[in-house]
Image 1 (cartoon, rainbow, N blue to C red):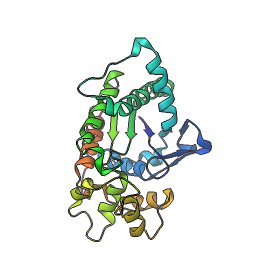
Image 2 (image 1 turned 135 degrees about the horizontal axis):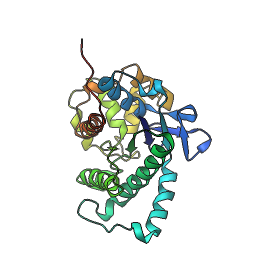
Image 3 (image 1 turned 45 degrees about the horizontal axis):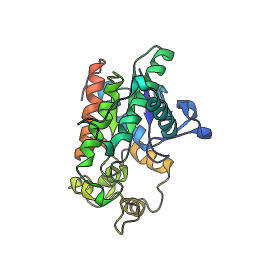
Length: 250
C-alpha cells in the first residue's frame, strides 16, 4: 500500500524538494496534514505510514497541468452535472488528475494507492458556506469519473488553520464547530491565520506545525468538526475496503 498526497503548500501537505512536480518520501518535505493522516492510519492498522516511507506527493501545479490535457481530450470530456457545478470545477478536475497519477503509481509499484487530495474550502466569508458540500461532491465525482475507488477528499472548512486552532486554543476541542463559520480570508480582521500565529507565538512554519501534530499537541482523536469528521470517515472507509482493521485498544 502506498499513499499519494497533494496539497496547496508547505504548511498543509508539504512540498517536493527542488519544486519537483512529483516526489517520493525521501525528497518530500511533508507537512502537518500528512501526520494527521498518519495518526488515523496508525490507529486503524497499528503502524506508521511515515515510518514505512510508503508515500509521496504530487504538486498542485502538476495536477493543474494534467487537468488542461484532460480538458483538451474530447474522449474524456465530462459535462457539468448536479454533483459538480461550474463553481467547483477545479476540485473536480484536480481529483481526476490525482486519480490518474495514482493509477500510474499503482502500475509502477504494483500495489494499491490511496490518494488524499487537500484543498482549503472557503477564501472569504462571502464565498458561500453551502459550497463546502459542493466542493466535496465535486472532488468525489472527479475520483469516480476515473473509476478510482481510493480517493479521499481532505477539505477543511474554511481552512486547515481551523483544525489546528481547535486543539491549541484556550479551551481545546470545545465548541470547535464555530470555527467552521469563520472567514478563510487571511486579510480579515479576525483571521484564522493570525489566530494560529498568536497561539504558536509566531512559529507557524512547516516543521513546527508538523511536530505539534506528531507530539499530539494536536490530537486527531479529539477533533470534532464536521469537515474533519467527513475526511476521517472517508479515509477509514477506504482503509476498511482494502483490508484495514481497527487497532486493538488496551
